[in-house]
Length: 323
Image 1: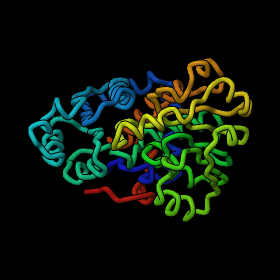
Image 2 (image 1 turned 120 degrees about the vertical axis):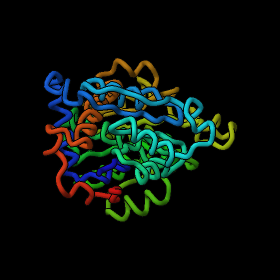
Image 3 (image 1 turned 120 degrees about the horizontal axis):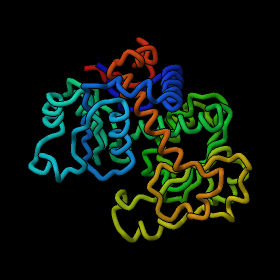
């Protein structure tokens, strides 16, 4: 049985095949509208989410399946002290696949160890957010036509931003990738990402503070919000939250074909005057998230159309999560 804990659970070839499937789903939705008839996904969200939870639920409904689950820890037996391990044992009796978001790093992995159904990590603390990464890769490839030879700017909260950590880990496997890391000193990329991912793979990168200095070089700009829920005190959050604001004036510095992405929700970091710029692709990004989650669900459930997209070497790209 296979689980999705990290984008590194997939080889580059498997990612490409899954994105091909997502592209076909986009073009031919009716072909896939009943492939999950009789199947159920459990969305187990221990912290708030709009896009990720509804995206998973929409994906399963679009495939003809059904949805069960909860949207907060307070509406589950976690409020009574039930462990993640016990919860997933129970959910395994009800559903065919589960997506779990949890504030504690490693909680989805714990669930996968005790589960008898495939488990998808829908975000664990500041650690990983693999399906957002699959969404980001699908969006970039769909718009740019490739995932190699790109200069990617990552801006904002690079310390706590799990979407950034996952995206870097996935993109370093494509040739010709270069990163410009844009953040204040307090929110720089963690040492383990800098040393164990970027330097270890000999990926060129530079760290800058001013967004304006990076804009003219970028093929893709990935904006992130400063996350109040990751800060230990309100004073630090208030000091950092408006450090970067992308507006129409700064967009004048960008390439004509620069792609602007954001995992959402945004707060103040992208001005609404950017929304109508054709380079602003963050709402298209949400739609691509549905297609790639549909492809992932099919693959993990061994739906016939999904089987060719995951080879026997599924686990070679990362941790072995078979139990």
